[in-house]
Image 1: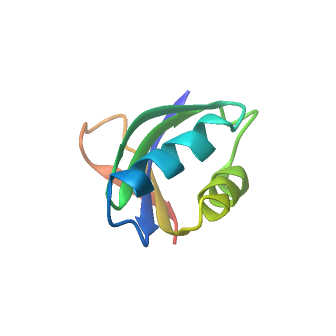
Image 2: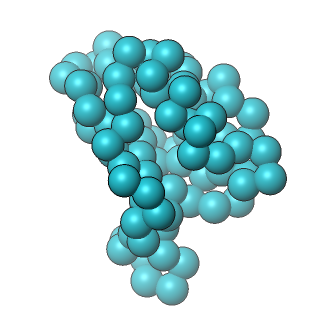
Length: 84
């Protein structure tokens, strides 16, 4: 499993959080760790799910992905950007 953070545009409330969580939870290979306004922390199985599946889930909820960052395993708390 790979830890990633997704920066999401358009979220403003708890309903937004629940909508994003619901759509991401539907994606095979994705475990939702936390969703807050503007961000989602996920663990993904790269053999099953990738950036495109995550983008589609966020867009299905009515929002857009600003960027996806891979968590740097060598330095906890610091992400490595993988795509803008």
